[in-house]
Image 1 (cartoon, rainbow, N blue to C red):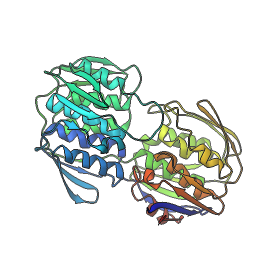
Image 2 (image 1 turned 90 degrees about the horizontal axis):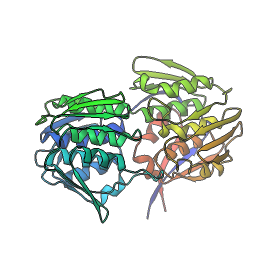
Image 3 (image 1 turned 90 degrees about the vertical axis):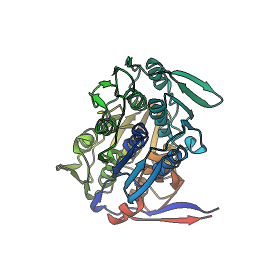
Length: 422
């Protein structure tokens, strides 16, 4: 069986311009939201990534039809979606598949879905999703690995999330737009893609106010209609990955098609580390320096430092003199990749939820494995700064969330290629 791997020869400065694709996490919510309209929607700036391909297959199994207008623009016809059962094997491959719960419940007042999959980052419960659905009037049963949702009708309610949950905020929002009356989500997540999904729903006729704050108010409507073209926001995590890579290679890169405000927690840390950052209307220029300062990072819900940028950030901290720390405030299994970095000579130790990073030591190329999507990005950046040749295996993880990563790095001067091997 042929397996793809990346071969990277490191220590080349990245220089030039790179254009960021649409946000994976926004697209994974917008596409299921189209089901609520029972209409034809056109979505632009959809990233060409594995997660979207999987989601499309799942939605096609429900009766949705997709037409590719161009590489990143799709037309979705959900008029013939007649099944509320999302139970294909593909459900296990994708964490974002759980948004079909809210979308199908909103449209049909019932849904049966398989438990979602995705990267193994530790416990990722859906109790807050269930709490929200029950508050809206749904009966929730979990049997034989399936989640069964039924409701005679959905009625608006006040829902306080016990923990800030992006997934629960979006799922409740999807169901509540078709509920009777007013739904208030308190302690809601504030991530940019929540705002993007709310904007898409509002364009279809929903009445959502407060997305992007910790209180979202949703007044239910009887129907949604799609008569707009919606463009997915830029991917803040892809943008951050290239910003960190530019800084780590002491490069000079203009990262285009970004919303600088979404990047503030990262740009603040880069500037604290002595990286030069120049912000423009829709782009950010990163100019790396060789005298990086050590810093401490703690991952938090937005607008805090994103957990998805934690693994790439660890590579940059390896170049800073002295001791830096990263405290992981979201996922307890997010440090699995560190064992791979040790193969390259990284001096990092893990103490509970904290990684202690001893910077200033060179990395040397080695065979390493991507253990999840963002760990894969970290492995690539490690290869870009290491002496000699690095082989990165499990490339399918990277394909889940990065569009044309290899080609984009090549355009910046990186010596990276993808090959198939036994």
